[in-house]
Amino acid sequence: MTLSLSIVVPAYNEGARLGKSLREIVNYLVAYGADTELIVVDDGSTDGTAAAAREELARTTTVRTSVISYQSNLGKGRAVRLGLLASRGEIALFTDADLSTPITEAPKLLEPIERGECDLAFGSRALDRSLIGIHQPWRREQGGRVFNLAVRLATGLPFWDTQCGFKAFRMSVCRPIIEGATIDRFGFDVELLYVAYRAGLRLSEIPVRWDHAEGSKVNVASDSIKMLSEVGRIRQQARRGVYDNAIKAARAAMGL
Ligand SMILES: Nc1nc2c(ncn2[C@@H]2O[C@H](COP(=O)(O)OP(=O)(O)O)[C@@H](O)[C@H]2O)c(=O)[nH]1
Ligand SMILES: [Mg+2]
Image (cartoon, rainbow, N blue to C red; front, side):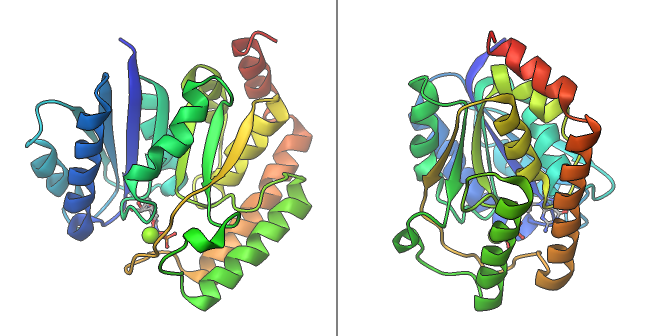
């Protein structure tokens, strides 16, 4: 069965802040109207995240919901991909569990896809910085700028913020790319955008609101180094042809 929209929430030790976010997303989906689903992916949490999600989601009968949960922490990239691949929506959107980009921003990504103007629409904090209410800590924000510059230089992608946890996919053409992706930690966004771009999908970077939420689990020093090495791996894998089948399948799905 195909639905119109799936929302995926990756969650790692989010027990404390997840309930409120899920309520907001359910409210959004109820108002959205058409057939929708909400999928939470508990990425090996040790704080009862899955139980908190199930308890909150049991309150709704109008929206289809599911919780994917496993024992070990596989990384945000893996968690997001598992959720997206389980999605039945024609469009699937993933959002960070803290809703730093409010879910009410979703139409900015969904409408261009629904209108048939693009295949992958992703939120950006770099295009209109006046939309940022609460900034990330200074070191993190500057680190983000440096990382995005490195991504542009290393991959040639013409984007300014690849890392915002708010992205939407036209699944008919994006599914092969998600299936062919390999990066499990925070470099996964770059890989998805890179392979989609190489396949000739229509990508759109869209300014969205963002309020940094306390309780980030990203470590500026160690995670930045891992992310840069992941970007290096994307380049190597592209050269070795690792993405060729995914690109071919996505082009076939586009009718090219
Ligand atoms: N840090 C971290 N986040 C994960 C992981 N797996 C899934 N996530 C989710 O990824 C999202 C981003 O996390 P967050 O710490 O808020 O990142 P930040 O806002 O960019 O500092 C949240 O929804 C997390 O629950 C993981 O292994 N590590
Ligand atoms: Mg956050």
